[in-house]
Length: 465
Ligand code: FAD
Ligand code: NAD
Image (spheres, rainbow, N blue to C red):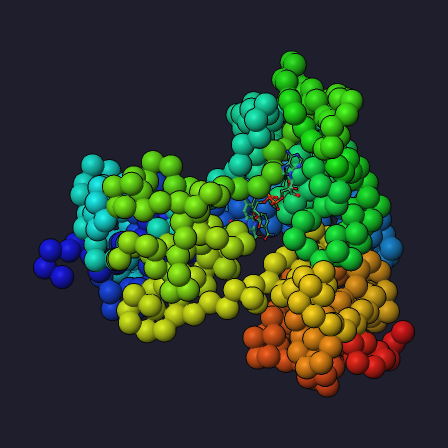
């Protein structure tokens, strides 16, 4: 240790980096974490998961009051939007949680090195003009918004914005155009639609939510349309010009053809995210990136350079906070000589719209490519709790191997799908069959009973349809 300042230096304090730093320190390793932002917590806590969920939760209440859902239950209210206060509670949530990481760093004796780190060699980085040498360096620098050529984001002007700008809008736009029908477009598009904006979503592909199960994508599209979002599928935006307080977009069919224009008060660019490696001095460390700009690792999160590890959005795999966290724990455990493993086949994903959309494992399409499958489906309309709560939309789908009955994937559209999917992930982690789920006693009345009934539908018949 004599020559090293630290056993472990983590670059980046997002859910990957801060969790890795805390676990390394818990395991007795002298640990520091370099962070360029003014607060800890990365994209997730500062401008991602947490503030978006604060706005989704608050706007959900607003719509329940304004849109008649409360009236349906005998509660008559006329809500008045105090957008400043709504933003205030979002900022409070961020402040509380980022401050919480600072507390955890102090508690676990993780040194926070304030500033952007840059490799000067394979075991040394420079942070705020100081050279720091570490036996192990974990790159957890995360990701940033993918720019769209011809569409220049300027969050300060609040006309063409990225997700960070879309969280901060000072007033509800009259017309918001969302470029990209992925997770960010649908979540943040939902926030502003609920608060009164007309929302148009322009998606390059023939369906929204790529990567999700085909049935889920179709049903989600139907639900969002019913809620008032207008979709322009198979369409690309080739240009956006700011004219006064508006943006004028040029749209073209994805396959080529005549262009049209569309006017918007606010344009949200949400066409994906790309890994953060610029300015990191990877060449000084002897590291390279793949074609997608990601740092490749093995299953232990080792890069090609001994002593350098990488986790989270900067490496291949879904860009999700819980994936980054699990990799952070496993990476720190591997550095400490333990056996840290992440099962990348069982990473749940959730879209926090209304209803929520969640899945884990293979889609039906992917499962069919691998062999014969059996599928069980159960509609939320037939689930007593969802029906009682006036939540008729959605379904649960369980996909199992036709021969072994082992569950390969579970997909849900339901008000609390994000919570429901945890039991499916746990069952799959334990190698469950659909019969195991079908014969597990589920509390009544709960939305989760729909998972049991979808599992019953795989091999036999559910009771309630
Ligand atoms: P990040 O959280 O991106 O953190 C990386 C950190 O490294 C940053 O703070 C950055 O400043 C710092 N950094 C970069 N370079 C350097 C350097 N050279 N030196 C020092 N520091 C550096 N995921 C979910 O699972 N659920 C959600 O609900 C969800 N919602 C989201 C909503 C939005 C609007 C966005 C944008 C993302 C959302 N995500 C969500 C994705 C999630 O935020 C990311 O997957 C997650 O934050 C990745 O964690 P990470 O630790 O790899 O990187
Ligand atoms: P995404 O990959 O989810 O969706 C981008 C969409 O844009 C895709 O549907 C793609 O086909 C479309 N697209 C790409 N280029 C286009 C173009 N030129 N014109 C029109 N459409 C185009 O990306 P995102 O929504 O920006 O989110 C980025 C990442 O952040 C995702 O990987 C996601 O995992 C993560 N995230 C997760 C959550 C969550 O877990 N709830 C929430 C927000 C973000």
